[in-house]
Length: 432
Image (cartoon, rainbow, N blue to C red):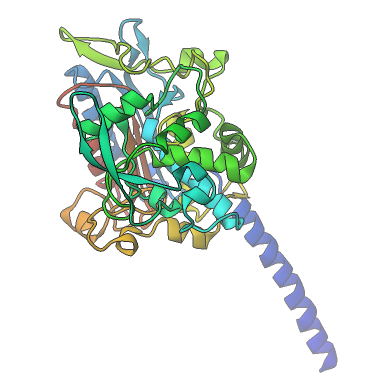
């Protein structure tokens, strides 16, 4: 009997070791690779509708070109390029071309914030003034003089917290793209950099100037799209003790294999940058210099790291970042976030800030709620989404384990509905 028990115990030990090793290997194998559509429950024929739609949009001059990527269960099943990267230069788009992702930078910055939160560096409801003292005595805009941009203010009832900054409820504005013309004038007069620049300025300089300007409203009162993630880019430097760009490179991009994601491109990658185009006299032309120069990723001072808008990337790189979230915080055997932290990030934070705000936003992404799902074409409840200033977009559906990334580079064009159609066409290709 004792001999039998000994044999059973030894057997159990070796089985346990095998299972443990198998689990570790499975976890480490959660990489981002390619597969046939039918291997992951999608229809190759139905996925071809995406190409039909995008080819038609290029043919009709609705868009100059696009790169589309679809994955399911961590496997890329669709990755194609359509149209031109630069019509004037007659350069066709390639799958590996690099796009300015603008506001798609926000989720990456938010992820960096939450990685530091996991390390116990701060609490989400800490006032930002604890780390950036210039925000201590915030004011709300009360009156504004159109003739000379002078104004009066009143004190806020509460301070801006890190949670407010992550959820666009801080009351900060967004200058040139702000919906309130008063804030456009205020930010311009103060010399605030809103998005990206070739000028020789640091995020520290910019944020300290921003902190002196009035808010739209009391923190936590409304959802107002803002430069909050730029503030958090500077905050990351303070808390981590590292330059913001270095933190993203070493803590996020390198572990995830995002080798083509950066603020500014090395010369070796200049030829892969897609031109921002607009239409003039029914021809696609390079978008001219306005309040910014679209060549910012390849020229200028290259020292302004915008947490809200400055990164460039590829479709595959960004999909890898999203896959890390679908894998509950891990990819390529590297864990960036705990599963429990990912659950918090992907939970609608707005009801806990104010029941009067109708937005649906987590700590890094916009979210699809039950209504969005029920109305159709948006993905499952809990799908996380966002896009960028130059007509880029993405979504990731945790329930179906589907990712869709559609990258374009256009400004001031009309009639482009390809992003809206893209998500519908991805979801209708589910065939399991």
